Image 1 (cartoon, rainbow, N blue to C red):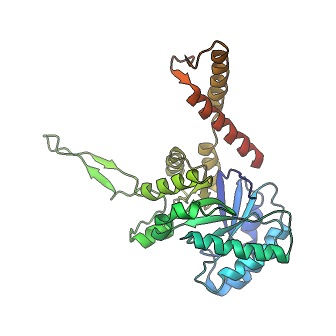
Image 2 (tube, one colour):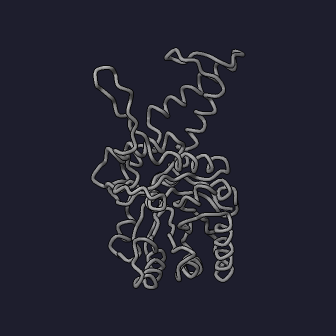
Length: 319
């Protein structure tokens, strides 16, 4: 059974950079994924696998969740990545599967993980995170999320997704100036532009599928590293949709992601005050009361408050 934890930040690190790997092991990210796929050119793939194994086994990762993004099934390296890394690394937590497009993909990885675990028995069971980064993956996301077993999280991969859509955006995870609507003429020749979120369809569907089947939803990267305000806005949109975590492609993004995806002191205080107020109301035989601001609260709000405090406890368990 794969235990449920919270990843506020999932930091990408190329397997071929010992310096970056050492820094990642000391970074404040909740989770790290060592990349054997997009960050590694073909001639270095075999060596990168060995680099990832060495880093996992020799560096002190503390309480951080450690994953490896393997190469895809359609490559010469994908299956061997899974077998070798799982068998060699007792510290490994997750395999991050790129271009996860069906429940069959998840089950195939489960078979390979089970085989590697049988060859090298371990206490720490390896889970699966599926990268939903193609139109096929989005179209099948409910079936993927419902495949059960070792699957613990789904991660949105906006880069490959927009590539397959044919939407040629330079910035991944950022809004597009082209994805707008114009208001009607106001009679004075003026029309306003209203921006929309071109990622909304995919991200909302992935988040909903995760919540329907008890998985952790992780939003994809924001590629404009210098734009902290844009990253903050993207993380807030993700949080509003129900995401608990977001991929980081640079350590400088971690603090902003944590700022947004950690319940604030005001939210925690509100939750505790609400629970106390409803306990008083229950002793008085009332199921709904006004809070100190004059807003009506009832049992639904108690559930919301408890869920927020549960998330805080999970965050503290990994941070």
